[in-house]
Length: 352
Image (cartoon, rainbow, N blue to C red; front, top):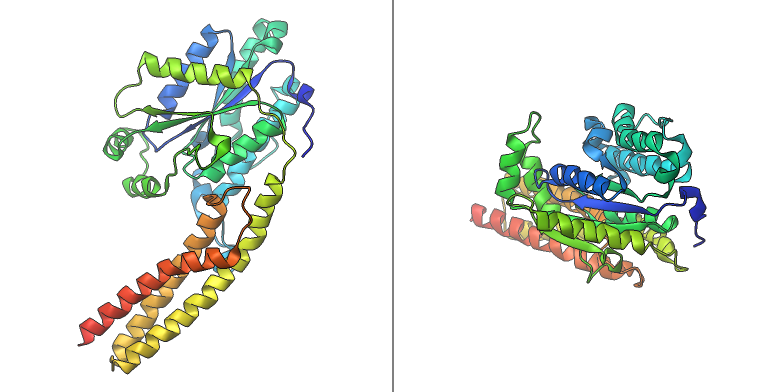
């Protein structure tokens, strides 16, 4: 992969710092403190708050086709639009006042993002061109694939990249959330906690430059110092675009997803057929047979939806590893097979 011209982002070092964690973990509070501390270091900084930039309706699932494997979510398009705004700013830093021509982004929220940068540009334009620039991306980032997109952008322009994972117990997050003027539904936070995959440098080498902060209590000065040292290191050690096939691997994953879901669907249909045959041989009543069929089909639809989502978003394989579709299907269908056995056993026991 060829590198973009680093001159396009100006002469100053730039860092994309990902703040990830559950709602109520303290990301917004931390970002404000980091911005204040960055100013004392003579750095330019701005917070990119996804919650403000992305409209609420974007987080609702949008069905674009009847087949489950064609399901997409509106929020993915909006998340991509946020990164496009950052990239445009990186490519043309001289047009800070230009608002994004994108209906997927809240223009007023983006204007607030660059306001601090405009003030620095106005006070000392030459010095601002040379001072480090830090973007604090404030979002949950609960899937590794969400964070990997930011890493790709940083690598494309040879920028610094780092991650701060705010670890906070679920009870504290829910309590803090409830005190907000517009709280997120508790069940949403609970579900997000189940799905959250924290940075894992052992599994993903691109997450090496990450730290964990325990934010169940208040953030300490020591915590802020750790974050500033992390960002300083990232600014001093920008990513180098490496000739590899990582992007091709991601493209292959996108192409493989329909095949994985299709093969899993065929296997699940066979397992359901076997379960129904076993139920009939056990002389289960017609009413119970209909109930079993409905439950199995509902379980299959839910399983296939989750399979595609996890295959695309959770990056379960290393980029050096070829995607073995047959192995992926077998490993995944074992989960559905266990659910099928439990449903079948319950129906047979209820009937006996």
